[in-house]
Figure 1 (cartoon, rainbow, N blue to C red):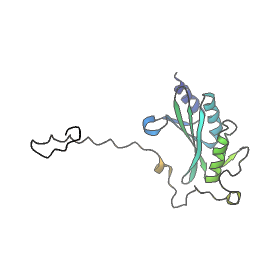
Figure 2 (tube, rainbow, N blue to C red):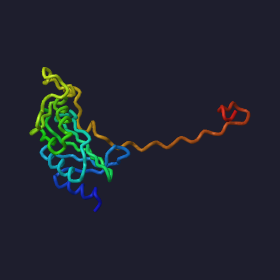
Figure 3 (cartoon, one colour):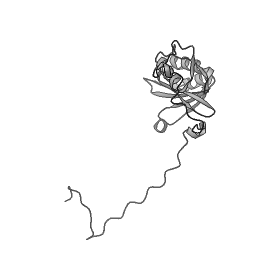
Figure 4 (spheres, rainbow, N blue to C red):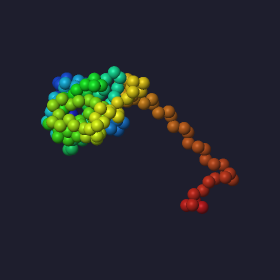
Length: 182
């Protein structure tokens, strides 16, 4: 088995949904969807496979939100986009003790979206002043929240056929020239 097939098997056992996607079109190789209670198990699995955390944030959706993580590794390149659904005012287990870089990402996500990370060692405001700790700048108003299907990548329509090459100019006509031609 290749490294990715072993990784996929390990992720599927969490359980999680794992889809291989076209890196050239999406910017990552694997799309992982799981429940919030499986986030720590996913992080531990990825650490065993020598992945590092690129970022963690959230997307405000209707009726819930999702915490989004991106992982990558050196050596055999592979990028993973992992999404965990959570209530808009919900809690996700921290991974800051597994990936120390998650500490600030989780604090920023709490500041911006109000999602709490259970077990975080210091979940104090990172970007917002303490007097504005209840302000959640990236939470959307009820009117502007989209459904998950509205923000998901969909395959593009096949590209239309390329137009035929223009005909060669007729003799004696106005033909533009370049400095090299002329």
